[in-house]
Image 1 (spheres, rainbow, N blue to C red):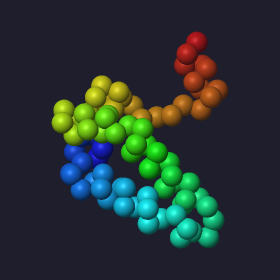
Image 2: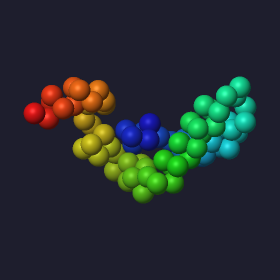
Image 3: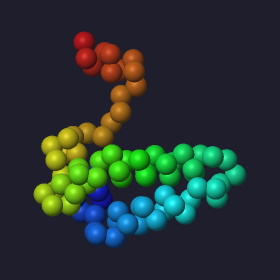
Length: 78
């Protein structure tokens, strides 16, 4: 929703709340790391999220979301 520019006002607030509620709840620290990752992204890309909310998705967000494996990425770049 954030990338597409369709997030409602409460989406970012819900994500922020989630990043505070999740840490310490898992049997391992994986949930803690995921929460820190999302919290960091919300801070680091706050302006981009606001731009998407105002203007819709940018050109980068309209591109394919496939992450190429390193060997495939090297082949594609050649």
